[in-house]
Length: 320
Image (cartoon, rainbow, N blue to C red; front, side, top):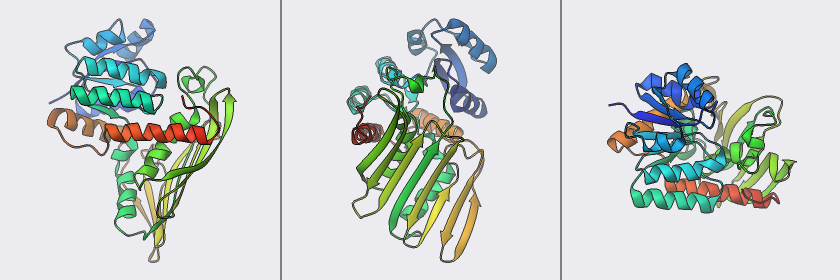
């Protein structure tokens, strides 16, 4: 059974995050709307979307739309997810879940009351490279965990990019750091010790580094830069008996290595170049159609936004 997907906006990420996985898995892209109707038409023509709608509301309320994909700017995640919930439509929403914890809680409460799934798109969590690293961290192979490090960097977006807009809830910790904090939380309940950031413009961080501490004494570091020379997205988990590194946990299709170092030596596993987004849409569809469990939930999304808020406060900045 296939899903009929409605897409909000004609964003660049949609090609990899929803279009390609939908085509691979046999789901239909039935409707799209954008602020610019010409962009919506071009998007539909390019990616085979069946119909162009006049507004986001029209997509959400279309009886032929089973689920909604929301890749809009950060500030628009919560309002349109709430609209989808009110229409009874399950949502796959891009991260971060909302602008802040309070807004995330409103969405979670509405979704829980309505019994409508709203799934935050932490796609990395569904891929074998991440699942393998977490397995090693939890099964004793690495011993007691002593340090976790997530490094995320990308070249500077163009000046008009929403990631540079305070009104649209941009910033490095919002766009990149939400991943690093999410990874840390797979390994326990750390506290934020300190954070440092550099502002690109008032209220918007070009980079933000967050240091964390775990109850057992382990440390964590989440570094996030939107002004780097190149891209890298690595996760490293260090323990008393060894360590594991995922070389590109965001885009394993570019590098699917998992390097494992123990007293027995170093091994490198290649766990497949199928995209994280394909695994994610497969799991989302199984959840919507058959009630299959997911590795995250609404409470997880609310808590992650609380960590993002706390990270900004620790860096001397206001949450979005």
